[in-house]
Image (cartoon, rainbow, N blue to C red; front, top):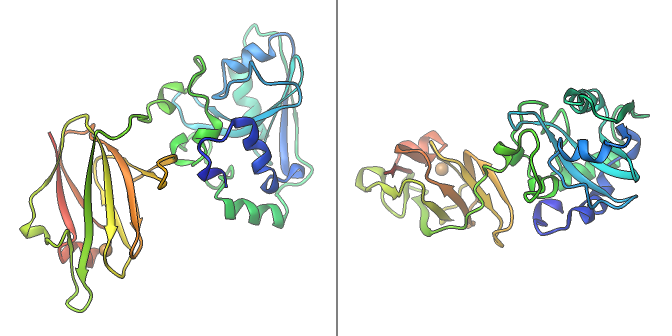
Length: 293
Ligand SMILES: [Cu+2]
């Protein structure tokens, strides 16, 4: 599944995702002309200068504030011809975004709308099983942040030059952790007492993060219930056991007997609450204060 293949080469990613992309339910925008490559290179999050004729890659098309306008594939179909395809119904959005900065550019754009308004059931079930985001569902044009889509490593080239929205997408901290802290989610089902590392809030001292520090937080759930842990004020970047993939969350579900880790950049000074989102658990002690100083 693409979510677990952070190292996948972006051309391979298109082949891997093929089973859950219904070709008949894609709107297509063709960009052709002498300036097509230069112009698109300056507009999208993916590198296309080394894209061979026939090859394709996933890309975000962002708005200038860094929100996702469209998740698309871009295929080079000729030296000066590119076809971007996206979920049916979003070709207009894509075309408008491509045309928006097309001033004194030698390139023509054309929209071909999809034959079918929605993908067939087999493709749709495959997509859901793979956790692949869909336009209008997981991606809302102009409001979704790239890092929340789960496909940033496939749809962004972090080495390429400037394009609108780049500042925000590249603000995601790629530093490794400077320090690790480990905590156990603990409790007693019968007495209905919940705690962190065996200490209820009243007995605990705050967890300290240095300002700007990058910390890996490792949680072990020693209880028989799932705890949605909410760290206020800071993003929690969930990672896979191999450390490859990260998604930014406010609340992290920790399942019974699960060990998981997430990365935090302590970029917000102050005192923050960190607690289980189940009110009863929080009130009976599963709560810590986090101090960033
Ligand atoms: Cu809980």
